[in-house]
Image (cartoon, rainbow, N blue to C red; front, side, top):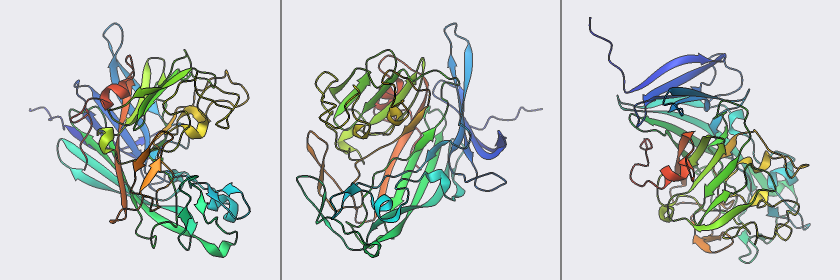
Length: 404
């Protein structure tokens, strides 16, 4: 009797901790199995679907024995859904706030896992498979376009205070997960559709998807280090554990790719854009600390005295900054939240944005009305300098699944 052949990328249905999921399993570049379980919409599941609730990967321990890490999501959470924050706007009463918060008393950045999705099979080859989720994300904006003060980045003229001046727009969002035989990293492509917005300069928001949490080290160890590379510089904390008093550098030039990673002991979870920064699809937000170190950055002058780290809002990616305790500058966190990030001027017609060190060409409202970008998801044992950074600097295929 002939043995059943191994499918290069396998797709099955399974139940993970009581939740129905579509599971993808494949062999990575070392020939070891990895898997991703994507929560389904409906099928008896609580809440909504469209994101990963479990990932598994293998590694070799110090004795050479193969070990498996099962990276599960915390209860009622997961990784890979879309989130966006509205830009803080300037109003005629002098206040800076979001339209959602000030005018409508609503959350300006609801979690994408709170919205219904439709899911369907994408590519279905032997060595490459994908799965696509579609949802609609709400975004408050003005009814009439306004301008921006080039010197401050604030609305000019300021926005009025009547609800009649604003409305809720819908942004269709498509998230495609891709898996490829022989590659370590799955790819997540996000496409935000602006076609339901009449024109530019009505909404203004950032891009933080993919977003969420997985216990990537299968334990409760504290985050020991944070690293990232924006479109200009590499960042790394240089203290033994991550706290608000951690020392850091953010002044080594980055000519590789954009990336962000969390490191907990010997394990790491990260995201990177699989192309050089010269062709990045995303613009960075403004930061006082970019190009500096903890010794030269004036945290008090930037508006966040009491900590050595750059202000929470300065980080180009949402990460552990909001997970660290505010009442203890030496406190650690075990919360493993990670997300992408960008400037908050998407939806606007600006020709450039300023990151704190330079102006960068910008297209926040493309003629095809589609904001499209990809990231690769890294899980594994960390290496000196970060596994995510190493793979982000690889060039070529970046050890990542191709785009669907």
